[in-house]
Image (cartoon, rainbow, N blue to C red; front, side, top):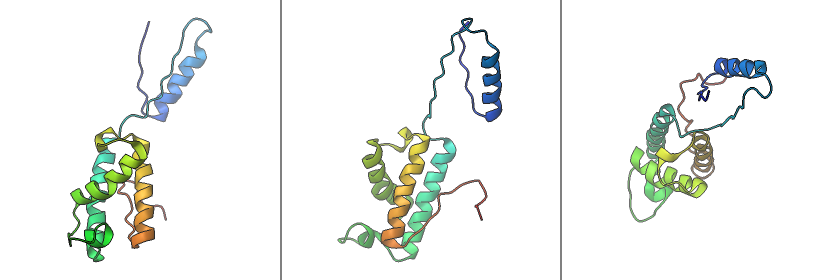
Length: 137
């Protein structure tokens, strides 16, 4: 009997571990494939909220695209410009990927950390990544 099991909670993981422990050696072969998967729908939504929040913060601080990236045009920030000129170049440099739809879950966090650190150090702009979880105090 061949079967595939998708585990998305610790309860499911523990139940499968118990089942594997009860198997007789040699009776079954078990292959485990760990797959991170692409970014979640929640991560995608959070990324776009972050783009909007960062754009607003940069604009509110008087940091248009000219002062942040280019000197030849005064262009106010919006979420698409943040994605195109800040997020995507970092994403491509770090992952070689050209689309946010191809990002793995952990890559979203890694890219955010680089963007956040750069914005904080070079522009004194700090925007936390959106989350449904309560802030840690």
